[in-house]
Image (tube, rainbow, N blue to C red; front, top):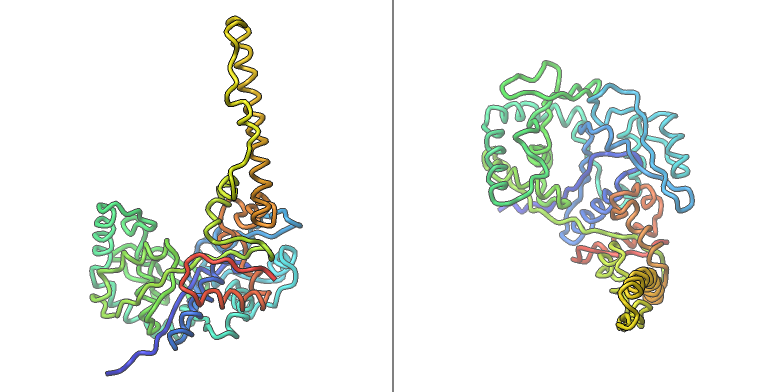
Amino acid sequence: MEIRRPLIATGQQIGAGWTPALSVVKALAALAFARRAGGGAVFWLADEDHDRVEVATTVGFDGERILRHRFSFQAEDGTAAGWLPWGEVQQRAGEALWGGLPAPLEPTLRGHFLALGAPLWKRGIVPFSPTDPERRNAVQERLESWRALPLERLLAAEAARLEAAGETLVLDPRTQSAWFSLDPGTGRRERIEEGVPCPKGRWLSPGAALRPLLQSLMLPVTHVVLGPAERAYWRLADPLWDLVGLPRPTLLARPSLFVVPRGLALAPSMLPALRSGDWESFAQAPLALPSRSLEESRPDPAWGPEIAQGYLQTLAWTRSKLRRLDRRLHRASAQCVLGGDPERLRQRLFPLGKPQERVLPGILWLRDEPLLERMLEALTTSQDLLCVEES
């Protein structure tokens, strides 16, 4: 019996500055699992996707102030991410946001992404572009044969089944195309309707629901590291693997990772309360709150209705003011527990109200070699929520 060496794959649509930073976490998680399993790890560059807004949108910082930025690319609408130009204009804009950047390996967003990922590649995870002409030409005949199969009908039926079971669809194959054409010269990607042949000289490009099959067609994948939304749409392909004659990889959940300031007593279990601003939950003992000093206060019947009504109104106003003092007291108590101001920490770990790995560009972590080592070490555990100290 032939024993397959484990090949662990993960990937992400390529984005400016490796945005979002969770791409770095996925890559390191795949590498950590590969080392444990005695196999290899591959990062799938989703460079044929064409969500221009997503790949161009990122953030930088002016001190602690977040700067939103959207890169401008002089390319026709529908151009796949790997073909978007990365020249002097984009390089200067990136350096203004994040400081010095390595030169792109080619004058495209793919070349920029590959250059920034060098610290990961040298650690052993291999970048894989499904749009490399030699690799892609080799699978075109097989992709054409898939179009003769009822893949779209099965995807729609599975979507209906999951919906009837109460599942939320993050991708609906009944409204999103299963197939596109991709011009290998210009990167132009266009939807192909069912039954319409792919234009001559273009590649068949599977939509998101069929991408799991393309990945296993091009690579002998045994395991895949996926985030929650990805796992949801991978489920759509469950009925298809046997039909196309490919083994279904084992799905591994991507952990969530937070890079936290050094010296804080912050456990992963504290993160939900921190995100919601629930400072009261950090109290180690009940506090004597200012608002409770008036809990038993009542108007004297001898005052009469007019004075009593005025007293109750004033009491309600005073209590609202005292509750603000309650929050200040809880914040001070939480600061003693954490070793830092909880509000500033919340803004640091949940910028724009979202986990930092979904907002920050990965370049901020990729340029910090010691941090990458600590992240990789943390990801060797089986925990799904991790905190790693910054450098």
